[in-house]
Every structure is written in structure tokens, then in C-alpha cells.
Amino acid sequence: MNLSNQVATVFRQNPLLRLYKHYIFDSVIILKNEGWKALIRKRGTKFLFIIFGYYLIRDTILYIIIPLCIAKGLL
Image 1 (cartoon, rainbow, N blue to C red):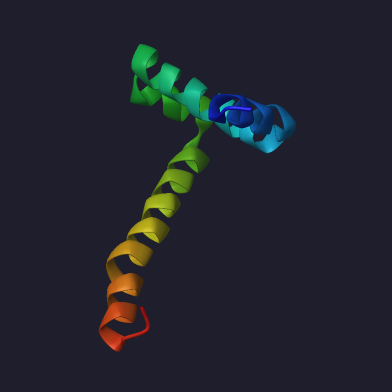
Image 2 (spheres, rainbow, N blue to C red; image 1 turned 90 degrees about the horizontal axis):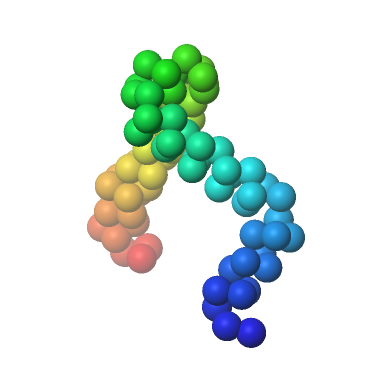
């Protein structure tokens, strides 16, 4: 079984991944066709908080925690 078939099998088996994929693609389509205001109106402010939280956690790990661990010799 090649890699693309394995990925397709995982997406078919995991409903959470399918929901995530649909939600993200649908949001991108709304953004491209109708703009930011329509995206906020349809998805709500919760969507903005999710995006903000994702980048906050990612950047904290990437730019604060990893350099501190390297400086202390843990990594």
C-alpha cells in the first residue's frame, strides 16, 4: 500500500480528521469568496480565539521553551 492510500485510509477511519479537514477547507472557501466579515459572521468569534490560541501556544513553544531548554542543556 503506497503512502497516498495509507493517508486516505486514515482519513476515512478517523471522523475527527474528516471534520477538521472539512471545517478548515470550508473556512478558507468562505474567506476567499466572501471575506473576513462573512467568516466571522458564519464561524463566530470562537474561531478567532482558536486561531489566536493555536499561534500563541505554537510560538511559545518554538521561541521560548525550546531556546530555554537548549540554554539549560536539556536538549
